[in-house]
Length: 403
Image (cartoon, rainbow, N blue to C red; front, side):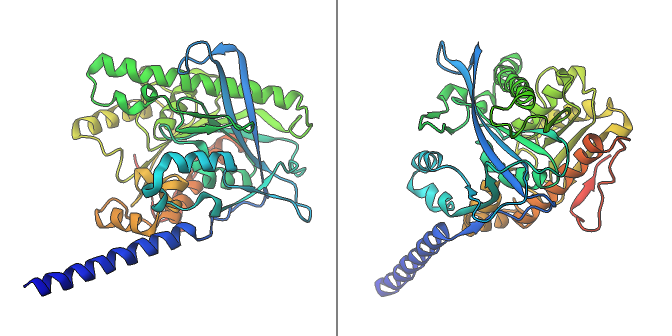
């Protein structure tokens, strides 16, 4: 009996060591983000923008609003030796890995081994006079670089994609000068979950107001950049009359709220997010798409019913030619980002599949999502006739149009 238990223990230990070795090898292996599908090379640059006129309501008392802004854009054809952009700068990588800790790092790719398709600070493509601008918001407290795949693909199709990282509410924001700022414990949006009625509404609106205000400020600064970029790179190259906004999860709620309030938004997309704020009552006056997963937000039945009712209420008030509801068959709420879909270990994704939480190949989910996002924005930010896109395609059978 004891001998048999010893044999089982030996094989269990051997299996554990094999798993750890596999995780370590995968952690250290090189990986590239999916190649963008558009015709433009992609450039990327970062800005540190400080709003001297506004105190950040979610920062320590007396701190001015400051944002780390990531810009992906159509680039000129690269010259020989042009430096590619690292996935994240070293300061960011070290801060993220320190916060994740050894175990989570083991289940996640080494960020220094992840390769993008962006060129650092490249010139803007001369192919067009100017390009539509799309604001991209991350889910909850995720940093926006986690959505680089979606940003690069959209930029390769002729868009300037502007992502926002806000200190004290994103997990980790590392500025070019080496300062690292982490989310304050009280700025976790998930703290609002489970609160009753008006208390939950006040909690969510506190975050929503700050985040949507950031979008407005970034559009103000983008307009200034278009008027007079000190480097000259973006002067006259941003078409501020064609502005879109999209985001994932709570970022989708921000997109809907902003597009309901600010006339500068010409089209928006909520990627698998519930709605919050005044948009539920006021509706959205511009073309809008709700792009969802088959798994939703993993909420209780009562919450799911309320989320559906809120989306249906806003959707039904949109003109028929200016609305879309799309579900991606087999998609998972947590794998719309690079982190969930590409950087996690195969073991992590295998567990999700075994639990029935992941029914589509992860890079495929990003490919379908990219297709839906660019198709919608092409229709309303590029097509002068602004006709509803035909989103269904034999190339993407996972797309289901929901009436």
